Image (cartoon, rainbow, N blue to C red):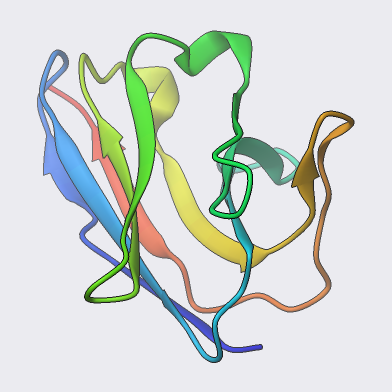
Length: 118
């Protein structure tokens, strides 16, 4: 499954960005990941469109919201109150997203850079 991310950019602390993800086919769940310089890629959030279940890591809860536009088949990660530590390349991928958490993937797109800096 191919995924394409977009919407990254540079914002000041406290700013907002909305990332978009398109995926080939019609996956049931999408996960958002990020990789900061010198760090391992980490799962951030996921959405299962069949169950409606969402998952967020603690550091983004109440600031990030994952959603999907069913008409356009686009998945989103709305990010508010951005912090410098949110700076990373963000990726989306088709992964399991259920009560056991979010899975990982071996297939990655190009990602989109998010930079939070004053």
